[in-house]
Length: 114
Image (cartoon, one colour):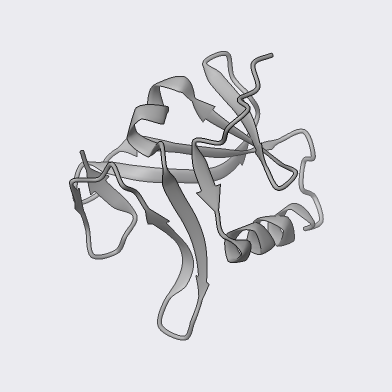
């Protein structure tokens, strides 16, 4: 098992609190880890993935504030240095992504281009 010493992404205190809330829900599978990644699609080309999943063979594992995280090794070049935050405002609720590798982002903040 390969575990990274440094985290390729960061989570704000708000994101950590929301992730812990989700992990504390009834029925959560403690064998799952927080998956951070990308997939094709969205209005600017790529969409962020933030979900719970089981580790796969091409994943690298890292920890953020005692939260076990996984990322496909091929996604690291798109996400290295990204910050994930949680917004809980009246007009904006959900995870947000600040990605220094994005050359263009959409208005909704969930897709980007490199």
